[in-house]
Structures are given as C-alpha cells and as structure tokens.
Length: 401
Ligand code: CTP
View 1: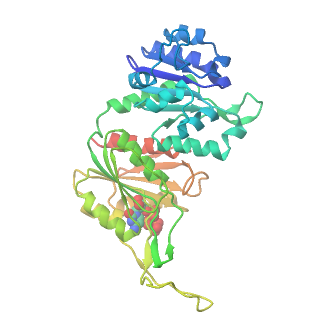
View 2 (view 1 turned 120 degrees about the horizontal axis):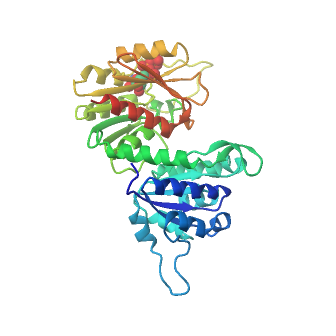
View 3 (view 1 turned 135 degrees about the vertical axis):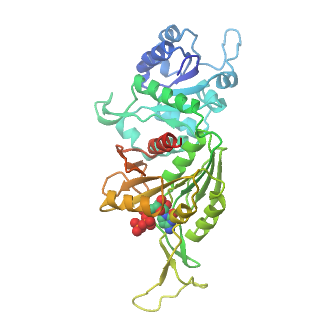
C-alpha cells in the first residue's frame, strides 16, 4: 500500500524523536520514499546522520545553506509529498502549525503542503491536558489534519498518563489504512446528506428550547465522507464548528422545521443520508412575537411535535438509497435502537448509550454500537469522534454493494 509513496517526516524536538529512526526504517522497508525535515531542537534528540542514513536522503533543517546560499524550497518539498507526518509533534510545533507561525522549515513546508498531514503529538501529561494544547489539536483537526492520538503510559518525566507518541508500527498502520481507503473509490462522487447539531425551537424572540449537541459527530462524519470523495450536503443546526472541505456544502438551519425543509429538498438527489442531528421532538405550539414577561410563579408552554425527519425520509426512501440513523439512549439501549431502526425504515443505526462515560453530547469521544437491518451488531471501544466517524463510514462503505 505504501510502495512508491512519498512522505515528508517532520521531526520536532521531543524525546520521542528517537522513534523516528524506526518509523523511517519501516517506511523505507515498505518501499516508500522519506524526506526528513528536522527542527533545530530535534537535532538535539536524534542526529541528522542517523536520519539521513536511514532515509537515504540528506535531511533538511534550514531555509538555506549559509555556505553557498542554496535554497531549500519548502514549496517544492510540500508539493512533492503524498503525505506529511509530523512526529513527534510537540506542543510548540502544534501551536505554530495551528497559528501559522512560520519560523522554521518544518512549518513553512507544512503551510505549503497540499497533501494530507498526520500529526502524532507527544508531551508530558500536564502539557497535554492544558486547554491550549486541546484547542490547538482541535484547530489542526478542523484544518483537516489527521491526529494520531498519543498512548498512555510512563512519560519521560516519570508522570504516568497520556502523552506517549504513537508507536511507529501504529503510525504505519494508520498510513496504510488511509491510502487503502483513498484507493477505494466506492464513495467517490456519491451524493450524501448529513444532518448535525442541535435544533433551536423558538419560544419568543430571545428564548429557545435546545439541547447540548455540539455537532462534533455529524461534522466528523461529513469530513470523513468528503475525504473519501463523496459530495456531502451538511445540514446543521446552530453549531460553532467550522468545516473547510471543498466537498462539503453546508446549509445552516435553526429549527426542526427548517432542517426538515432543507433535508426534503436534498434527499431526493442523494444515495446516502446520515441523520446525526439531535432534532427537537417538540416545538412551542405558539411562538410569542414579543419577549414574554414574567407574570406568575409557574409557566406552562404548550408544545407540539415536530416532524421526525429520519422517519419521513425513511418513508420516501427508494431502493438505491441508504439511510443511517442514530439512537441516543439512557435505558434499554439496544431494544430502543432496534425499534428505531425498524420504525424509521433505516438501513443502519448507530447507538450511543448515555450510560457509557465519554459518550454523548459535547465531548470529543464516543462509544458506539452499530446495528444493521439484519440485526447484526458490532460494538466499538471508546474512541475520538474522528475515529468513530471513520468506523461508521467504513461500515456504510462495506454495506453499499
Ligand atoms: N430524528 C429526526 N427527526 C426528529 C427526531 C429524531 O431525524 N424529529 C432522528 C435523529 O437524527 C436520529 C434518530 O432520528 O438519527 C433517532 O433520534 P433520537 O432522538 O434518538 O430518537 P427519537 O426518534 O427522537 O425518539 P426518542 O426521543 O423518543 O428516544
């Protein structure tokens, strides 16, 4: 899978830089070409001679050779590669990547690269859990970079926790899986509808009924589908998330009624629809034109039910259309998910149980079970929402025949 592929390996200054010798060796053994870029600090952890010998190419550190003015073109290097791997990615390097601070060759090459970029963070536990690190990792993912999560264990400082750079074997596996997916053209050009986020049901001009959905799961699914060549229409309720993939056409909606209107239009031309939005089941029967005033000790708002979008699309579904729903349950999870699969005429249902810690709204992780029409059930461990999106799309792809 990696034979003939060209990789830029950007090494920043962390103790895990020593693992890059093995990573380079593995990539070269697979028949890949590796161009190593190092930051100045990285050279303190592993020698250029080691990396040049293993990669069979001179490594690059500086913008130019001060002896003869020979320029190391970050643009050419960036365009040469099929993928860039930043490993280890220190907090400093990720901060620069997230904010475009182009003060070394690794960052300028990253900014010029048009290829997918894999980022393998490493740092001490306290740095890893700092909000700025979390924010930078989220920003990098929002640019479409692929995060290779660090493992847990004993860290260089002696602290125990998350922050160990992924092992070279795991990085190679991730690269192989990526290129395998890219080679599969099953989803290329397919029109897909994805719903995401919450809906806001207006009570009066300043108040609404909503829920805690952030849209993270739906956005990650849209990104994953788009990366595999699908043409995605993402119909999303209010969400602060951004998506920049050129294959994603985003339609912003507010209420369940707006979402239904948008989906109805798009669905007819789609082969796949993934309903990951947390749509309100009820909306105020009357929406006040003016701000409601405090009048009495209690207030009753009459609600009427909204359209069940997944169900409505399930009723319209044609032979060649594939419909995926979600079920968020607090009790009798599997039983309820199966009921929804059948009553909404879905082909697949993704169950998240709120009883699992780390699953559900407004967190970066999810733990899912996928059930298909034949009642085949697959349980997945707790993973990042990006990885969960990958599993869901894998499943859709495998059932698309
Ligand atoms: N859904 C939808 N439109 C609605 C309500 C739900 O499209 N008005 C979709 C969701 O996007 C999800 C699936 O239906 O794919 C199940 O949603 P969920 O909220 O778990 O279940 P409900 O059908 O609303 O049932 P309940 O709230 O009673 O569990």
